[in-house]
Length: 213
Image (cartoon, rainbow, N blue to C red; front, side):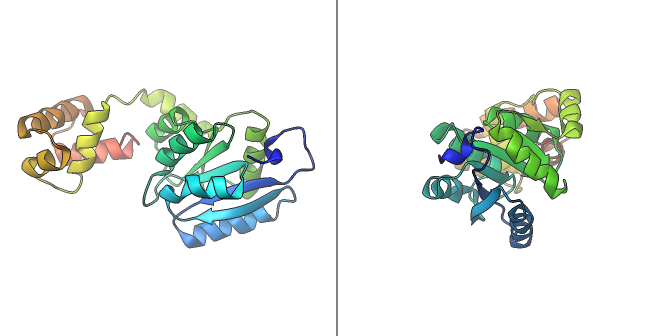
């Protein structure tokens, strides 16, 4: 990435990629950040699957990623960015303060995790801090994540629950996931037990609310 991600160059402008699917929110964030003398939002995208190419094309220092985007989630985009451009700093922004999202974001390589309604000055300060090598995490979310504990679901259980969220039958799930119907039933049953709920709908709702899907 550009020389801007060196903490030494105090006069350097920080080049930002902003990924947010809601155009009004994206434009407002870009305008507010643009008021900072040392920050320049050089590229904006509305899809998670456009993040990596945009970051490479525009030589950015920091990527600000919303979580819920079409094409790829912000957490998935963060993991892709971290693998391809490990020197790039990643800040996750979310409307939903779900503790499971924080853990997933950190595992994906994010350097900061903030809620969108934080003041623009706080976001700008977070950008500068991650470039200086710090991690920045919303303290309320950090406390909630510690209290909640780790995600009890396996990758396969999460995959089946995500697929079940649209109301598909076991036969449809089995066909879509290339599993037997018995295996699908077992994954769903285990997930339901782990989440201490009564059925698959409640399992999907609970896991989503906790940021575990």
